[in-house]
Every structure is written in structure tokens, then in C-alpha cells.
Image (cartoon, rainbow, N blue to C red):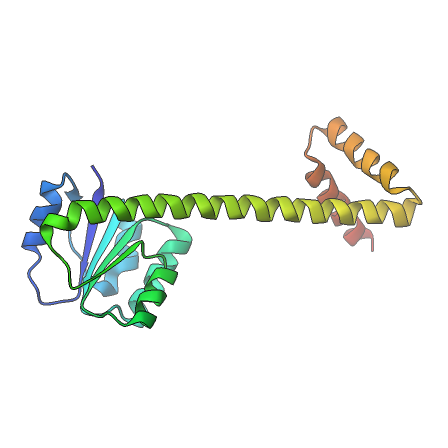
Length: 190
């Protein structure tokens, strides 16, 4: 049962939306205005955030980007504004679903499922990118450490790699961690 935070900046009553969420099996948290979005997410720790806004403001998009960066979760925006640039900005800020003129309570459960699935998919892609970036950085650090050993110790590339590998096994560390230690010592010693 996902915990849902409702964010509303319109004069529309949200009782029907709250009831539709409850009927879909969601725990609906106390609704907040867009100005309090970031704080509400930090304090209430919802599983999903739903915004019902006329048009997401720049401040709202910045808050969504902060949430996406520091406490990612699925975000669904229901808006009357169908400006393509704004939709792209919202998606860039981490919005999983942007629905224009369509807050139909009967469709809410399926929209939530799609948003949560898309969020999970994005999280998986983000994790994979982070892993690949880390592997690339590890490779660069290993190559730089080998270069230092070649230059300062007169080793061949194979000898430098074997030395790094031997130190990693001896210290019970990853090869990249040994390389970073060598690079840090070289920086320290000049």
C-alpha cells in the first residue's frame, strides 16, 4: 500500500482524488501546497508524490529536481498546461508521469502503476550508469597508477600491473583502491 503525498496549488476540491487513492489501496498523507513540497517529502517520506497544478512553476520544478537528486521517488503531475517545453522540464526534474487535463479518478490506479514502473526502470538505468561511471573511473585510476610506477620505478606495464595486483591481494583491497592510494601518495609527495 503506497503512501501518497498530494500536492495542490489549485482551488479544485481534492476530496474525490483522495477517495480514488484510498479506493486504490493507497495511504493518503495530509495534502500540502506546492511551496511546502520539499519539506513535506523530507518529513513524511511518501512512496509517491502526486501534484495537481494548473502549471508547474519554476520553483516547483526546482523542488522536484532536488527531490529527484536527494530522495528520488515516483512523481505524477496532473496539469492543465500542455506546453511541450514545460513537460520536458518536468520530466527532466524527475517526473515519472505528466498527465494533461486528465485527473479521472477511474484512471488513477493505472496511472500510478505506470509511474511507479517507469520510476523503477529509471532507477535501474541510473544505477547501471553509476556503476559504469565507477568502473571507468577505476580503470582511469589504475592506468594513472601504472603510469606512475612505470615513470618513477622504471617498470614495464606488465610489471606495474603485477605490482598493483600483488598489493591489492596482500592488503585485501580492490585493484582500483590500491591505485587510488598510490595516486594519493604521489600527490602528497609531489
